[in-house]
Amino acid sequence: MAFLADEHVSHHLLRAIRLVHAEIDLTTVQQLGMTGANDDAVLDRAAVDSRAVLTSDVNTMLGIWRARVAHGTAVPGIVVIQMLGSSLKIIAEDIVFLAEAAEPRDWASPIFVPLR
Image (cartoon, rainbow, N blue to C red; front, side, top):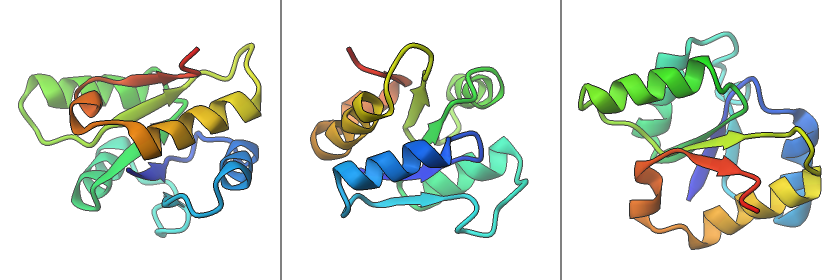
């Protein structure tokens, strides 16, 4: 699975993910020229590009994602990052694990990391 990181994802975490797996298909909204884009635009872009969204925005992004699911709108997968009490290394390893092992059915619901 490929990922699109929204603006809420720590650049320290993005670096840790790339250290764990340098070849991971991960881009950011900043790299796409979407800095400041609203959450709907980020979800739309992720869906078009077949990428799961990485976010730490539990309130807005996750709420919009759930509303889109309820309305039958096409949504990408979403990974909600919960940094409190966890290390960058563990979260990075979990995201790499999802990239390599998650099945399509796994993306039907939000995935919260760390997984442990």
